[in-house]
Length: 335
Image 1: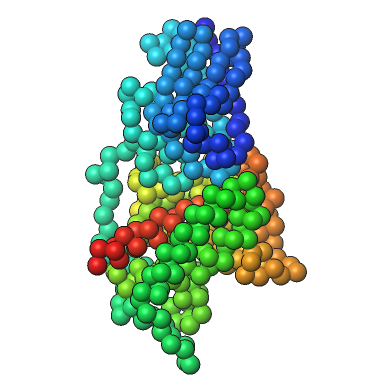
Image 2: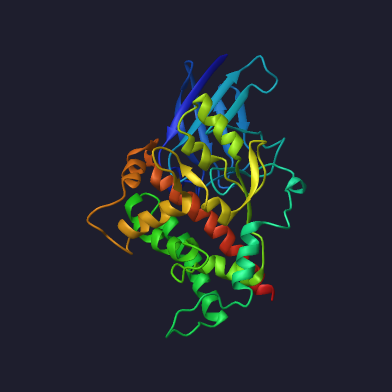
């Protein structure tokens, strides 16, 4: 028997992980009944005729729909191949490590020893030089908060981002309304000399002089992606973000440097951090302006399955912010 089955599962994070054994798909593959079952241990089980496939554990962090793809060929020793969003899912008897779909891809089956270490990153030096005393920039007639107060603000902010992400997974506008003001206060900065937008996350990272390393699509790979025309390059820009190296197309980069990179190209280029600022200042609980930036309208109209490109982009930044916020808090707890 040979055949394929492709299914789109909407709002996957509203059902995954399952709290009990759950039939996710019940259909036919080339005339043969097929079931895809989710288990509480994060595994998928595929039943097709007399064949059975049990997957490695899968952590799904997608803030959108996902695509399940099953390929069956009984002439192969392992007759069932399983893919989620184009990523191969290995059988449990060959890989018991967790596979992460979308962000945060910290649990991919990769060799942790291959993660590069960079000791001299420009953004880290800038943070350290500016915030090494822990005081940062203070305006006139204002009193500097204690470090304990600032750490508590970071802790509450990271907790809030997690809660908003979880509670508003099916309400995209509420997700944006709640997360954007927090992101602006944690990660947006204007210039080295500006006394406005003194970002809490980078302020504390600078006082600790710690690295905020991640992997992203290299400039060379991004140009190649645009030239060969494989879809919208903005999607590639987001999908190649990870904490461990997954592809030769990636390069090591500081989180702050990534935020400062151009994400959208056209008549005007827009940086990642600027998208967050524009959105926070016009369409969030920080500001509801009567107008909005044209790039935000374009991103809301672009769809990846049933989710707007703007939500995808903000969700990626939320995941990164949560990761690095927790890293800073872990370092602070050991002091």
